[in-house]
Length: 190
Image (cartoon, rainbow, N blue to C red):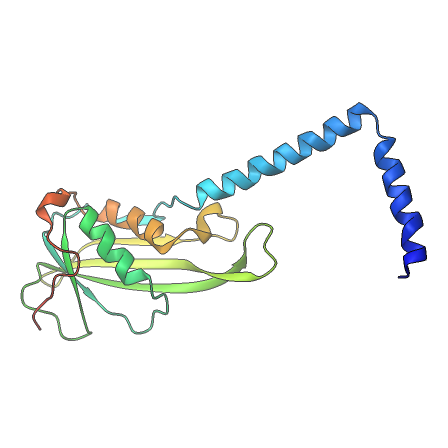
């Protein structure tokens, strides 16, 4: 479009804007405020998450071994699990499948799937944890399981792995107090 064609359009838009009554300006201001409120709601919801399903009672454990799942592509999931366990006062360590250390009171297995979606007002799709399954096992018996599912319209589907995992672990593990937990990355003997 040439500059000569744009000038009348710009002039018409400017005249229409200047010719608005105070009522129209109030409506535009109200719409802008509503949009800001919705955006703030998305920002708040992105920091919170709750488990969709929990089966079993919260377990009282002191030391949990997390079995690495090579099929899960979410790199921040295991550190998020360890941090959530530490906040509940539980020591944790990580081991490769089939190599469970002898000094573990319970084992935590996980699976997760990643999906893609668009954040509000974002042009490109982003990856997010759509499903997380956690199972806590003690001496071959399942103590408690938890599942997180992000729906397509859930405001918290783009929240961090840490936020999602914290909600699950809080429902699975009895809090012992942080002072009873030792270092987050305590080594486990194979």
